[in-house]
Image 1 (spheres, rainbow, N blue to C red):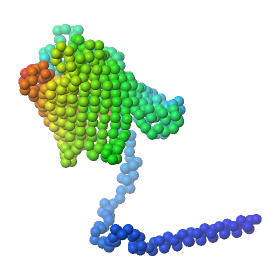
Image 2 (tube, rainbow, N blue to C red):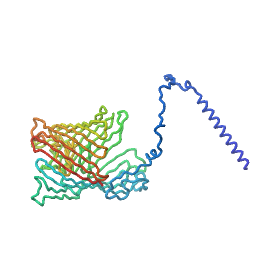
Image 3 (cartoon, rainbow, N blue to C red):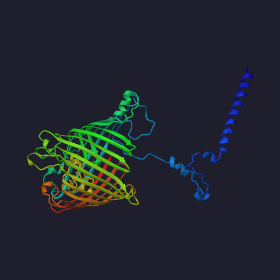
Image 4 (cartoon, rainbow, N blue to C red):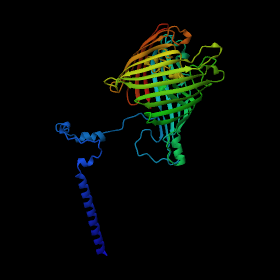
Length: 516
C-alpha cells in the first residue's frame, strides 16, 4: 500500500512539472511577440525609441541615508495634548483603539454604547467700553456648559446652559469709568445666574436607525434634529438662532451630468423661541414666543465653486400677523486667478405689511461681498476686503439676541464680544453701505493678529426711520490672541470709532479663556 502511495505521489509531481513547463513555454512564446503583432488598432502608430527624451534617475550619493530619521517619521509620533472634559463617563472623547464591543439594543448594525461628557469654556474679561451713551469699566465673566450623551455613533442628546448669564446680560462688576455706578453699592456688581436651557435636542441619522432595526444596511443617510436646537447657515449671516422645532437633511447628493460633486438639502421648522429683530411685541421687545419659521436651505459644490441658497417664512401670531415676512438668500463662493477668494451674498426680506401704516421693520435687501487675497504665505498672511450695501431694512431669517447683527462677519469693527458689550459700528446694514479692509497674520499658526479699518455711510435721501445709523461711521480696530497652553487662551481687542451724528466710540479689553 505504501509503495502504491509513493508511485502516485511521484506521478502527481511529474504531472505538475509538465504542466508548469507547458505554461512556461506559452509565456515565453508570448514574450517573443513583436510590437507589430501587438498593435491591432489601425489608428495606432509605432514610435521609435528615443533615449534623449529621458533624463537619468536621481542619485543620493552625496546626501546619504539616515535610517533613524526615516524611522522617526512613523515611530516618533506622540499624542497631541488636548484639554479634557470636566466630566467624562463611559467611552472617552479622545481615546485610542481597540474600542469595546457595542451593545445590540438598537440592532447589530447600529451598536450602542454609553458616553456622557460635560465640556465648554469659561471666559473672563477686563474692559473699558465707551459706547457713546455710556462709559464704563468692568470685569465680566460667562460660563458655557455643553452636556452631551451619546448612545450610538450617530445618535445623541445634547443640552447647553449658561449659568452665569440671563436676559442677555452676563455676570459683571462695573467699578470705573464716568458712568460706572460707584455711588450705588447695589449696582457695582451684578450676578446673573440661571439654569435655563439654551438648547436641548435629539439628533441622529434615520438611515443608521433603520439599519439597526431592520437588520440590513441602508443605502441612504437621513440626519435629523428635534428639540430646542441651534441652527446656523452661511456662517451665521442668514440664520443664527436656537429655537424649538425640527430639522432634517438629504445629504451627500451628486450629479455627474451636471458636474455636481456634493449637494445637500436641509428643511427646518421652528415653533417657539424664534427671534428676529424685525418682529417685536406690543412693548417693542423682540418677540420669541409668538413667531413660527418654516424654511429650506441648500449648498452645491460644482465646477470648483460653492453655492448656497435658502428660503424662510416667518409667521407672526397673537397679534403679530402683520409683521410676518419672508427671507430669500443666495451666495456664491469661488477662487479666481489663484489669487482672490470671493464670497458674494444677497439677503432679501419681503412681504411684510404692517397695520395702520406703521414703519416696516423687515423689508429690504443687502449685498455682502467678502474677499481675501492669496499671498505667498496663504495660511498665515490673509489680507481681506469685505463690502456691503443695504437698502431699506433687510433682516436675517432668524437671529438670536447675542448673535450680533447681519454685518457681524464683515469685520471686527462690526462685531461685539458677547461678554462686556464691546463697542462696534452699526451692524444692521439698514440704508447704509461700506466695508472693512484688514490684514490677518497668524505667525506660525500659534497666534493671531488682525488690523482693520472700517467705514459705513448712510444712503442719502433716506429718513432716519429707514435706518439704524444716524450718520456716517468710521473705525480702526486691533485684535491679538494666542494660546497660553492647550487649554488657556489670551485675547485683547482695541477699537476707536468716529460717528458723524453721534458720540464717538472707544474700547479696550483683555480676556482670558479656559477650554475644557
